[in-house]
Length: 244
Length: 314
Image 1 (cartoon, rainbow over the protein chains, first blue to last red):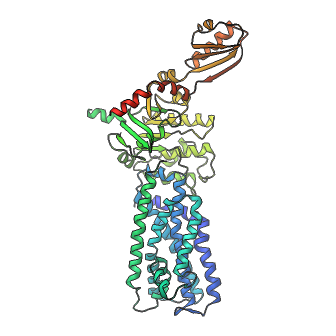
Image 2: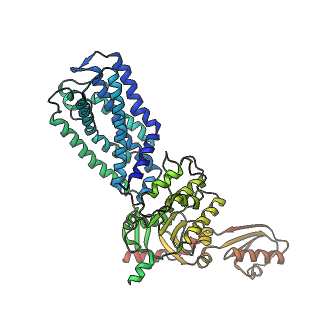
Image 3: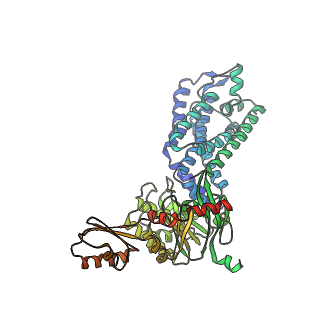
């Protein structure tokens, strides 16, 4: 655990960034209370609305948390700190791992807060169900960690803000974070190939006793992760061999 | 090369070249720096200093040639914590105070210096609790120096370390650097100030257009590029008389304006004294350095064709 100090300061830096907390935590919480609170007894796609919306908002906030890995990387690239780190013994692997861990830390924080918010609006799940939902969310977030790293190397700090907002909103919208937009037909087939759909759907699978999502979810997540990793690696190599 | 040589050399650059597109930034340079030397890499902008330093640090890969640090590759030397670097860009990251930042960097190295010691040494103890984004230019520079130093590296590589600070801050910086270097560290720094290279280096490596055009002790290199030009107003004087003043390398007269060239600052002082005592009527003095750029153009002008030819032959 020789990188514990490094990790500690990375966590500290992440927590001190208040702007990020607003987007990944406060926004989803406010939306959850205002919308799920007003539709406490509604049922959507056979699920009680507060449960659906809790998973939907947790997905949205957690996605924002993961993609903001990119914001931190872009900022460090811009000021030249990435290059400074490259002339220390810190390996690229540890550098990225720390970033991803911080993303996950904030994502879990968001998920827990939404969970607490959910229970105040009557969402009641067993310990196993909670665990299962968190697990599904954590796995579903893997592609977003990679997309975050990709965006962090693709964009400059100035353009990254709007890009992150846009990408997160698009994934959230298509995935059904703001309410299911496609429930049948060809469009449903298409959104089922998007990882955020499965994040939002995590609420559904905790209710069925047999319990696990179909193979399609794992395949979609695996393919997105692999494809995005390939693109990210290419962009990373281009970025590091660039004239600077 | 014997083993003893390998052990005594801190940096060995061999036939090192690097191009960016059509721009040949570094053209087949050879350079050996022994342990404990303080070397200035002097040259105007675009001379290839930063490109060379990036290759020494392993930040960019040479097109041809090799870099050897302490007998191994830059990557291995960096991994072993033998190298500390201060890059031209490289502001400290946000959301940390100075002490936290230095502690973070120290944690990455196998044998770091004590954080307090580094803060004291670099004069950053008073600002240890200040956020890294609330520092002045000079303070940022000192913090960046602390970042390079905390590794307790055998080799310090500094790319224009005083670029962003005022004259006084510059002197402070170099005094600290001298103190550090006294412990036997090897230091290579890039600069485009001749005075800086002259005052703080044991050896000056002069670069222009991607080549090393001079390499030697400061006095030697200064003689090549440290020229001064004196202008003054003086009526009815013979140019031949002027050029007899000790220290004048060239003299010229246009109407009432005279121009005298001399080799360096000391010679220039003598010439001025002599000029005043001989011609009390001389006035409107103006002294300026020839400027590195001008000097480099003179140094490199003649061999340009020959070298291009030589490159074709390789």
